Image (cartoon, rainbow, N blue to C red; front, side, top):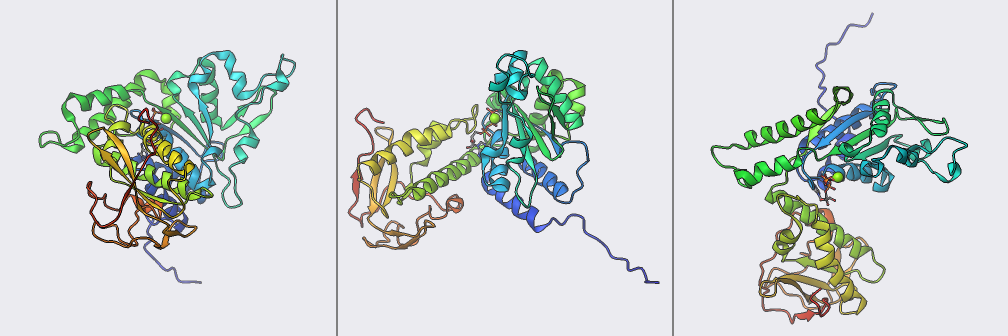
Length: 405
Ligand SMILES: Nc1ncnc2c1ncn2[C@@H]1O[C@H](COP(=O)(O)OP(=O)(O)OP(=O)(O)O)[C@@H](O)[C@H]1O
Ligand SMILES: [Mg+2]
């Protein structure tokens, strides 16, 4: 008989896969640690095959104010796990407020007028589209569930409980390999008011961060309990409250978004140039605030950065390998575009390999410093000082149209 070997085990160690997932998610999502952990835990349980049979892999409710990352975290997880955020099946509950609109979701019964023309949104095929050889997992997202009609609620309750959905034509959809995410900004306005009412960005001595966090959570959970039935609340595996983003977090979100724009630029066929933004303050002001979080950030970036860059490219003021610097002109309150360097060679992965133009270091723009080479890392690089140094012959560019756009 073999002697028993007693060995202390460590259940807190995660698999490499899970650790990689966690890291990748952290790179895309700023703060919201509880949300990140909830996803990572689920992933680990699913990979180990320990999710409950006959139930969805997880039923998660995300609460919190607008623009805090509730929808983004689901898309980000899909980008990482399925390589495509569009593989999340997204049900915008506001579109299904009338019970007859349910047909768009599950199809209408055979024999009904237009039966063949309705293509249900939630089908087994749509769910398996995200499956890979390694991972047979799907994401189903119900956004703004507080707006769902009674008919949709009934469907949802069934899905959360039994992990099945019966379509209009009686086909069954199996949701036992699906995570069901639900988001709502119920209580979001109250939370923003908490901040507007004196909590502000800075933690003060008599209102420690823990108190604020607790109050935010209580406000959201109370709002949910008032609105949603106990039947629904009991079917949730986890309720995560997303917190309003603080100033430093909004800055980090801006850096991530700028990194994504740089990646888009590097992915174009002819326009592989690098840009660096010193006018971040302006974009932050235009795109973020305490009430709307980072909700309008993308729009501000498109309007003030992407459109002008597109103009510069289309008019060949900027060419492959250039380095463009984007500053804030305080007097006119807009961004200005200046070519810092010409024709630096950019490798396909976006790293600058060699500069064919001026090599200068006076203002810290020396070779090897472009912050945008690897978008994820862009966030870590320091912003440049607002006033350019004198060493390079800079060339102002005209990305704006006459109307100031
Ligand atoms: N924590 C975050 N980390 C990274 N990006 C974020 C974060 N929060 C917001 N963003 C950015 O802001 C945009 C809007 O966020 P998101 O769509 O997730 O808001 P939401 O919380 O779902 O709000 P709503 O309740 O209005 O739907 C995202 O696309 C993303 O660019
Ligand atoms: Mg959302």
